[in-house]
Length: 151
Image (cartoon, rainbow, N blue to C red):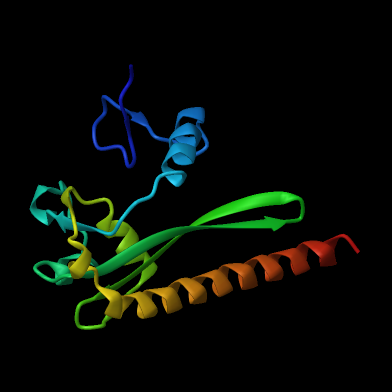
């Protein structure tokens, strides 16, 4: 058995590549699971480096969701991870900051059904929709440039 990390934190582990058969198998298995909302208590103090964009969030709480978005374009499939997050005060986080949060060590615990934060769900859904639109627009522009070169 070998050890894999994403991102690599030690020189003793292999870099976890998303297109590696192990990653694809784990991804397929994870997609089939029903994952109820959970609480993640991130521990910035245990992170070995400094993440400037995360530091203002220390001691704060909010909601974060991650979804996959697949697009078929020019005969190829593209998979994207879309992060959406906001603080309890309603301040949206940019996708890069939300993604960086997920690189921190943390503890996961289940939420009680009455603790699920419904108020943020609409805001996060809007962020996801906007990011999907941005991805689709970028792909359309790229395809138009490619089509223009082939004419």
